Length: 154
Image (tube, rainbow, N blue to C red; front, side, top):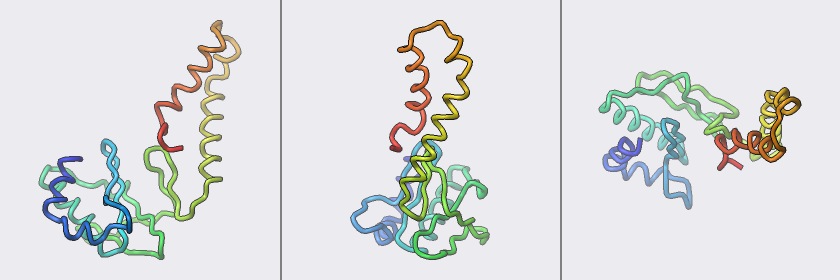
């Protein structure tokens, strides 16, 4: 993904800079094959997304239309794929285990984290009751999935 976006940066640097949010020096957040694109307006997002599709095609890659969503903060923008189909709008999306929403709603994030922790706790119910190991080891087993998922999304 880094190589792909390096190519996009070289070919489309002017469009990318013009569509950035104020005080932000990037248009994308990359983690393995998960990508978050950021733009100040519909025109900039369409240019950026088209550049992603174009550069991806060079490497033999395609976007999975079912996994692409628009989270528009100001109104309902129309973002289209190169084939003309419209990208699906969402009120919230999950990125790297964290829930992104149109509103800043810390309560929903906290509720989501608590639900996730409770599900982990319940899945280990028999272990908590029956295992012959120290409390320290039980705590380590409990927190390890949390460290592996969403550690930086607090």
